[in-house]
Length: 112
Image 1 (cartoon, rainbow, N blue to C red):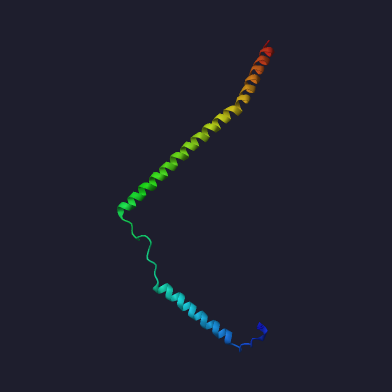
Image 2: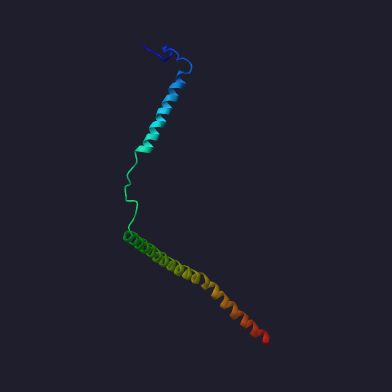
């Protein structure tokens, strides 16, 4: 059976020299890949004027549609808030009317 402890110790500096040469080869390979292997673009780099105007029109339509949906949502929320506010203020208005009539009766009694 062979164990790691039976391996002879490498001479000093041998591992560093091997790592240095491996790093140099790897960096040259990365540099060569970066310089010589260029990817071809998936899409053409330039857009024609008609394509640009078509896409611009499509984008404008999308923005307009989203603006209209947001406007509709805001209108519904506004209506809900107004109806909720009317519902909350109705009891207050009744109490004020009652208070006003009570004050008017008290005023009539004190005038006599």
